[in-house]
Image 1 (cartoon, rainbow, N blue to C red):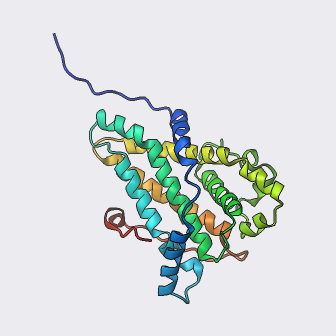
Image 2: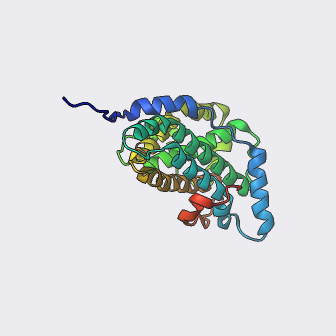
Image 3: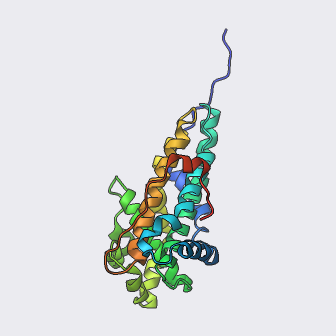
Length: 254
């Protein structure tokens, strides 16, 4: 006769995980412009003669650090079984945190390029365009099709100074993009979510893998934000590599 405890073997359904995440991330598209402006002003004050493209990495550094930390701490797969089960439940929260920092980074890029972001509707659809571009860049399955999400506005993806084109749209045309918000966020979550399951690897290996992946996600978002908010002429973007020690000890103040 044998008895003993066996660790549970949780099963993961990325579709249902994304659905749970949607309830959280739909409320994450309104970051504080005041806080973002303070970060941008602080970086600019230190280097007033440096071009905006060369300050992108500094302005968004805190977002990359916080996103990596949040994912690492939200996926506590220290031990097999229980740790993995707890981590699985935390994936929607991790998705929300990554989205929060991605949106915040995009807003800072817009302010760095002196875009007027006081129109909440225009700013929202600009951020949605950034997220769509990021989702398309991350998607390896071919399931995310810009024309299916944005319709006739799909041509805006990758277009330099897309913010100018968005500002020139009629109210009806802007609403067409805004109406795709749920599908855009779902596509973004489906593109970002599956690799985060690497965070479920046991013995602490997963959180580091997830944190490294988040750096890739944030850098893609920042690159897309520069295309949307930057000037029509191609500019230099210096995002830079984030040393591993910054994930552990970096100053997240920016």
